[in-house]
Image (cartoon, rainbow, N blue to C red):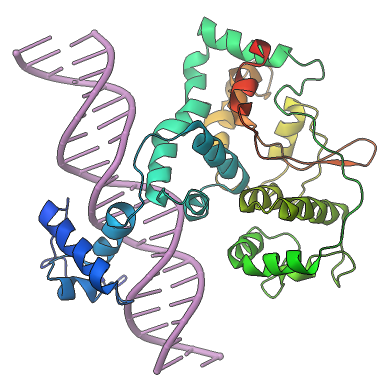
Length: 324
DNA sequence: AACTAAGTCAACCGCTTGGCT
DNA sequence: TAGCCAAGCGGTTGACTTAGT
C-alpha cells in the first residue's frame, strides 16, 4: 500500500534537465502561464516530465529573477536570524529573500552556513586558534553574557492604530506561522485579537510580544515581525538568560525540542555524557554565531528583554568582539 | 597522475495542507 | 462534512566537482 504516484514513473523522464527541456518549459510558461495545473502542464508543453518536476524546475531554476550562489553577508544574517527564530521553514525564510529559492537557501544552510556557525566547533576543540577566538568572546563580558547586545527594556504596550491592524490582517502567512508555533493563538484567532484589552487572557509574555510586535509594525519590517513574534517556541519561555547554565536549563527543561534546532540536541547536548563537568555544555567550543538571537528573557526586576534582528556587522562583532 | 574523501546542489520523494466538489 | 487531488513543503539522495593525499 501507499500513496498513489502522481505520475507513471515508467513513462516520465527523470534526472537532470536538458537545455532543450528548459527552453520548452520556460517559453511555454512565459507565454501561457502555468494554467494553475502543474500535473497537466507537461503534456501541454510536450515534455515527458512529471508535473512536480516541471514545477520544481520552474520555481528553482527557470523563473525570472532567481539568483544562484554568492550569498551576501546581509543574506547570511537574515537566514541565520530567521533559522534560529523559526527553524527550517525554508519557504518563509525564502519569502524574505525574494531572489532566492527555498531549495537554494536550504542547500546553502546545510552545506555552508550551518558549518560556518556550528560545524567547525568540533574541529576547533583542540585547535588553538579556535579556542582563542571563542575564549576571547567569552572573556569579553564580565556578566557571562558575551554575545547578546543590550536590549531595550519593555515599557508599556501600545495600542495598534487602524493602519497597523490592516497590516496585521494582510500578513496571513505570519498569522499562520504564529498559530503553528502555538502560544496563545488558536486556529480561530485573528492577529487583530492579539491586542491589549482583547478577550484573551494576556500574560506577561504576551504583553511583551504585543509590545515588540507594535514596534516592529511601526518599522514595517516583516522580517523583524517574524523574528520578534516567534522567538520562543518553548512552552516555558521565561528565563533569566544569565549564561550557559541557564540556557542549558531551558533546553533540558523543555522536553519539546526547539523546532529546527534539533541538531543542538544531537550534536552538542549529546556530548553531556562526555563532559568532565558532569553535563555542562562546552560553551567555549560553541561558536559565538550560535546565539545571534536570545530567546525571550525576563529581567530580575520583572522587566523584559527580547531579541532583535542582528544589525549590520553584528556577526563580526559577535565573532570577534575584541577587535571592535 | 590516480585515488579517495568531502563538498555542493539539482532533483526526487513522500507527507501535509488547503481548495474544491 | 468528508473525500479527493494538486500544490506546497522539507528532508533526502545521488551525481558531479573539488580538494587533499
